[in-house]
Length: 387
Image 1: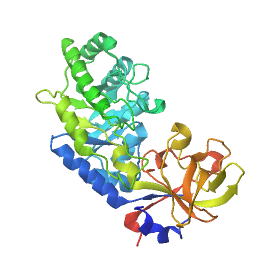
Image 2: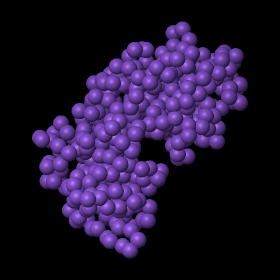
Image 3: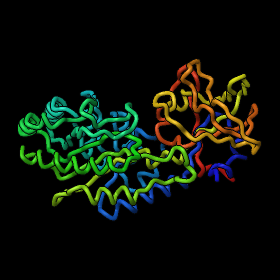
Image 4: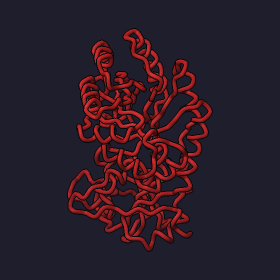
């Protein structure tokens, strides 16, 4: 059953394209994650880059989650939206001195350092501020997550993290960094991971890296496994909530947690993807000799993932139950890559019909842009719509 059906009468009166968020599903997903995580005493920092809308952040904050930020502005946005600084982590492979200084000033939980040179820089800025700063160190585990190359982050050929061959230098720098405290070890191998053995290999690899780091006298009280848990883009109604029980049980069984250590995760997509949809209207139907096109008013400026990652989202027609036909669903942008799906089966479609592009709650609205000087899409929430 299409979870959006009951909202269609309200959609008819709204200007398209827009994002729609099912807040009931979001709260259910967050509660399930929290319940399964709490069995093991793990902690979560929500990844703001997935979706930074204020109503979404309110749900995360009220659930007790911290914030995982990847820019200085995300740190400031998290604080503005009520996340306690002591629950904020700041990761980025390229932090500016100004961003680092702001994070130091707000005394966040930790700054996640991704290179030995960055550790030197953070130490110097902490010294200039006359304070001691808590940091984590991002390790590169060199694991293939079997996902798209643009969202792979844990291979040695990627730009992220510190590799084992640098551990000797890492130890020397940490010993000399009198204005830093090492709080955590961090790993993250990629996004939209649906191959469960990848998470097992990540845990086992972190076990090995911890052993190696101990030989350099490097130890930390916190372990972060990052995020990356994928969702079912093909069947969002059949699998609206990911299997958090299996995920946290896998971590518990394969990660060797040392006495006094706390485990952290940084979920983003797995919490918000399925609650969001792009609602768009058909502008034209072009019938060709070889294929038919449905031209909608949403474009790659509103949802970039299909053009950038060749991502496939479920596409549903909301206006009719006519016999099905095959269409390429495309947007209005002057780019051939502005295509949401090829050879998609939809009920026979006409100008004015409503279309839903599903599973758009993560890396959708946060990545929208004004290319072609288009307006940014609005957002509506189920809590505010009477059905």
